Image 1 (cartoon, rainbow, N blue to C red):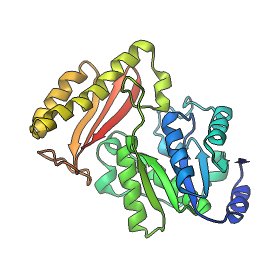
Image 2 (cartoon, rainbow, N blue to C red):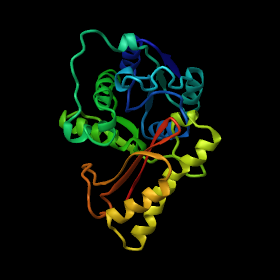
Image 3 (cartoon, one colour):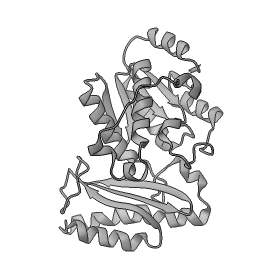
Image 4 (cartoon, helix red, strand yellow):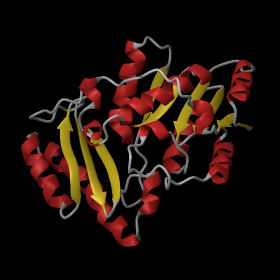
Length: 273
């Protein structure tokens, strides 16, 4: 596996490749969720390139940019073990300049839910992905469903910009107790991890409603709020795949999303129905 740290090296490596290329963009601190993305790419492509870059433009002032976990050596080993062809680990000063054009996520998707709490976040995501897509020129790119709003925004971006990249959504990977894997789980104490399980439990409980034929969004949300107490909530939303709030669950076209604080750590999770 090749370790790449400059744009020139990446361009040279990419030009040497024949066959299909899969791309897995990450911010590092790789866990089993990331591994599943990398392994899926390895299975589906001739070559897989993984980026590890804590992207400053998607962090708001006061967020955890400086303390976000960084484990370059471990990440490199994981990528190699998973069969990646290369890992790209750039510095911010080679990814950005003082003459940057604006890349803006569409208001319809970007100013609600995560975007309401973190204005400008998705602009930063699309900004860095534009650069990565131009450099890596992937046939396929892999994104986890855990960041559902991000996934839908990226799919819209690919479609509206007519980019010839297939976006592969990948299922959430969970710990045995149900907690969705996240690099930010490292911030949680053992007691907080137990509290965090209320998030996945509230989502799993919605299946009981659906199986019993109760598709009323208000009833489902009320029960979720009960289970989530006493967590500080950012939002609980029941939406369709256009991120529009719906009054009744539509099987095959419903996503239930939660964002909550466990201690000082903000966690997100969701379930597709």
